Amino acid sequence: MNTLPLRLLVIEDAPDDAELLRLELRRAGYDVTMRRVETLEGMETALGEREWDLVVSDHSMPGMTSFNALGVLREHNLDLPFIIFSGGIGEEEAVAAMRAGAKDYVMKGNVARLVPAISRELKQAEARRQRRAAEASIRELQQMREFALESAHIGEWEIDLATRAFRPSPRFFRLFGHATPPQAWSYEEAMAQIAPDDRPRVDDAFRRALDRDDEMDVEFRVTWRDGTLHWVWARARRFTPERRPPVLAGIVVDIGQRKETEAQLHQALKMEAIGQLTGGIAHDFNNLLTVILGNSGLLQEAVGDDPELTELIDSIHAAGRSGAELTKRLLAFARQQPLQVREIDLGNYLGEAAPLLRQPLGPDIRLDFAIEPGLPPARIDPSQLSTVLLNLVINARDAMPGGGAVTIAAERMTTPVEQYDGAFVRLAVRDTGTGMPPEVAARAIEPFFTTKEVGKGTGLGLSMVNGFVRQSGGHMSIESKPGQGTAINICLPSVLASRLDQQVQERAPVAAAPRATTILVADDDRAVRGFLVAVARGLGHRVIEAADGAEALAALAVAPEIELLFSDVAMPNGMTGYELAAAARQKRPDLKILLTSGFPAKEVLQRAALDPDIRVLQKPYDPAELAENITRALGDRP
Image (cartoon, rainbow, N blue to C red; front, side, top):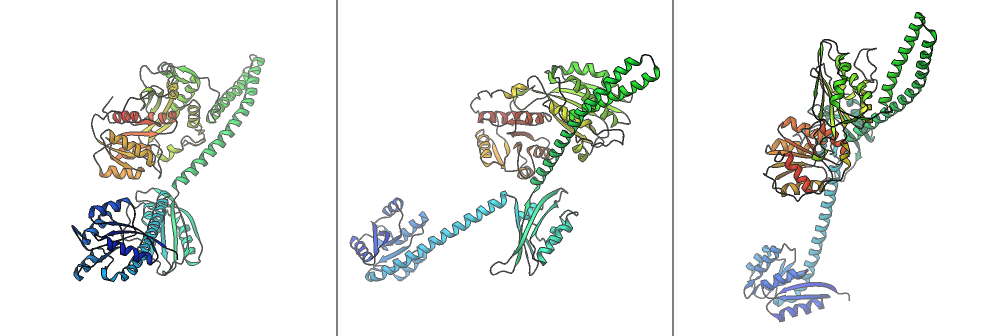
């Protein structure tokens, strides 16, 4: 006969009674591993040494009762069947023991009933264990499902096909711009938030899925309360759940990042195609212009003093020169213009270029210069830089038909890392003209885009400037507001830019912060965020954590004690660190900001330097460097 293993803990001060129990269980087919204890201390020790299947206890023993033993089980939070096997327990005490957690009680004179009770309780304990394991598995699966849906920004919803009741999930509401679910929400209210241009298409997809059993698959834009549009994708089909009416069940997914990536890819491909086309055309034009300019020069020498022919040849030559200038712009846009890079002192250079730059402005426009003394030399092609500045000055003039002022500024860019100071210089051209709305400024560098009248602009000016600056290893940005003028900021590498490629020096040990404050740490990478929080708390600061821009802004709204925002540059959910910093500054102008990024140092520092009030810490960094930058960002160390 097969034996059943049984690990039995017996609480009994009579060894003979315990041995009798062992014999009865062996006769019943159990392979018994038994431990007998007489005290609560012995019970504690036995429970700590191994796992047990069942506890059999006498009721009354010297110094303890079965109630005390049940209390020990509760303290250990153990689901062990507990059976009282006693010759001296009354009915009231037995009922109280059952209420305290005992599964059964058997009188010692009736040992034959003890074995079936043990068998029953072992089976019930195994059923409870299996049920707990199944429930734990279900909870784990549910947690994994929730994590997957949350990570992928997926909201669920269903429509009861019998009542047409609409039941969205909390994540669905967040994708529609609601931080908390509304008290009551209907299908019509959801449709009202869909962009008007997309609404008929979405409504048709819903109707076909509801009435004709079609599968729904549609992308559309949702209007949030702040008026912003957000792309989502909805997919659904019919289901027939058990013990419930049929439903149309589906998901809605945030695809804003995908749409943005697609737009960026489309723009990059368009710009690359135009660049290749214009570069090829420009090279072909140069061949033609060489012939035109060369032969016109020969003709000019050959005709001698004939005034009529000389005038015609001069006209041809001037047209050829104009064509050559246009070709240079095309090549600059395509980033194929050969550059003659030199080290130039911007202060001296701008002083010498001032007469040239004043010529196109006229009497109603003032030209000012703001040049920081002691600038490090910039590495640039001076002749191409003259063309760029002249182009920007002419653009500024055209934006000020009633007169105004143009300011050309040159200054050293301070960077968040001390040894990089002076690696970049900023050249800015500012005007007091009409300015541009955001949608126009965003397209200003596109080739052939112009807001000027037909015949008054080629649309290549800022494209040429941007191409030249990027070819020179720099970065360009546009700041403009209607009625407040425009500023073109150009970040150029100086002779000190090579410092960016040097090794980072050894760091000193981490020192405690001069004073404790509250820091908001925003980073979508949990491991990185944990490191940042650990260092900041080690410095003595209080830390509030956020996984993305939305969480960070919510924290700022409820925690006015936050003094420093420390955020990663690249974060999910449609808000970068730069955008978070801008939004935070609107709410808290005095907020100190420290950004961090793993992008190449030149790209990050060039962009950050255009807003010197925001510090950027380049990844990777050690704790000492992080601590030092936090202290500097707080203004506790110069």
